[in-house]
Length: 217
Image (cartoon, rainbow, N blue to C red; front, side, top):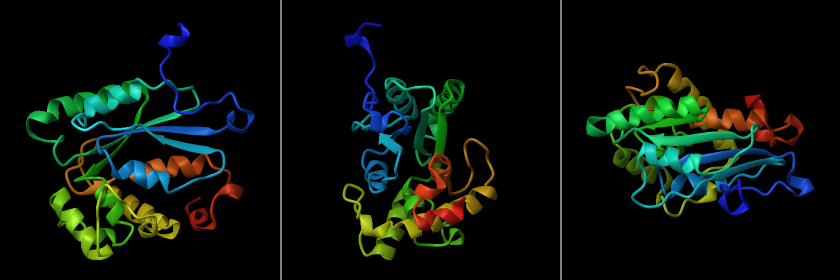
C-alpha cells in the first residue's frame, strides 16, 4: 500500500522506547467523557488511545467504522465502548445488533454500558446495589452530581476518579454484570468497562502496576 494511502496509526512505534508498548485502541459513542477519563491514567509500557468521536457520528456502525479506519498491529487490542440507552432499542436495534456481530467477526472487543458510560463513573462512588433504579443516562448524571457536587461530561475532574476508586468500580461492575441477564445486549443496568481495565491490567507487568490496582491481579 502506498505510504500516502496507509491508515493512520495512533502511536509511532519506530522509537525504541515505544517498540514494545501494549496498545489499546478505543472508539466510543461518547464525544467527551471516556477520552478524558482514560487520559487521567498512565502506566509504563501501556498506551490507551481513544479515537476522537465527532459530534453526530455516535451510532454503533459509525464507532466501528472509525475503529476500522485506524491501522493496528496483531498484538494491539481494539475496543468499542457503547451506550445502550438509545441504540439498544426501537429502530436502532437492528443496526446496533449488526455492528456488535461485525465487531465480533473483526476481533473487536465491546464494552457496553446500560444506560451509559456515566454508570461506570458512578460506580467509583456508590455500591452496585444503588444503580438499578436509574432508568436513563440523565438519572445517572443526576446521581453523579449528587455524589460529587458537580458533573460536566465535557470537563471531568481527575480528583473524582482516583485509582483507589477505580478498583472499587471494577469490583462493583464485575459483580453487577455477573447477575445481569441479556447477553450481548443487557436487559438491566450494567457496565462492562471493567473488562477493558482487566485487559489493561493483564498487559501491565505486576511490578509496574500502581499499588492500588495490584489487588485486582
